[in-house]
Image: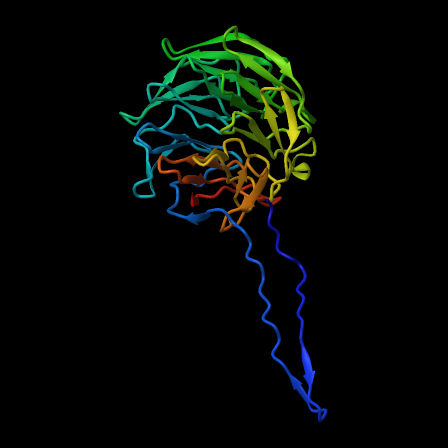
Length: 382
């Protein structure tokens, strides 16, 4: 159910007259405004060591969060990392740095508790390099290169412990090639092509272990509504039915009932085409159904939403406030509190105690200096 505050207020004043015509005012009725319904609240906490956007945030097995790389502004990239401790709500610098500076890379938690970091921009071209973070030693070590340079790609852990890497931009074109990382020998192997080239798309694991890939940019200015599914049993890709809207720079989350919520993003107008809209994919029918709209238009939101224990979805990036989606009512409800800026390319990470950590992102910026990131962080809690 969606709650809205009435824009108009009706004040009714009753005036009585005595028999001798002397006017006697009765007190006006007390007017009460309906309380705006919210779900949970966001509270600002301590700050990061650097102002970051387009970084990654990965929950480690001990419950701490690895926050790696990102950018302060154009051409100011980072190779360092922060570690967030949920027991203290504080940040500390990791003991070592990545091998290169990275922006718009991916970070995937492996079954052994280490984190695979792939690609991203380091300078003039996206990287082929990859490295692994070991939380036991708090160190990064390089592993073999990917087969293609990639930024704006996806990296998804498969049930067999390997990692599927799809699409992205190599500095010249958007890619259809996919590859698999094998942690047993730290190797990257090309496995074929998606049905379409995609960059800045979204990837979500389905309940049966297949991977749903939605939207993205095919070429510059041409945004996709198409979706496809990767089957790890035979490393194949197959089209499913298309979304209701073209989308890129959006996000997706698998719901408790195994459907997938896809929301936000933009069309080919980019900044001027941001969406409030959302839709839901049903793997039983392979169809997308339109959902109700969000309270905020959001894009540049990959990794900005998490599934909560009660089955609701918390969304905390790409807009000036946070909100929660309830699949039972098909509605979005604002949280209490607001950010001072939209937080593009922020991250949201679920903590072990069911709170969520919102980190970094950038606002609208200025024409002169472009976007500038923030070092601020928030906690969402019920």
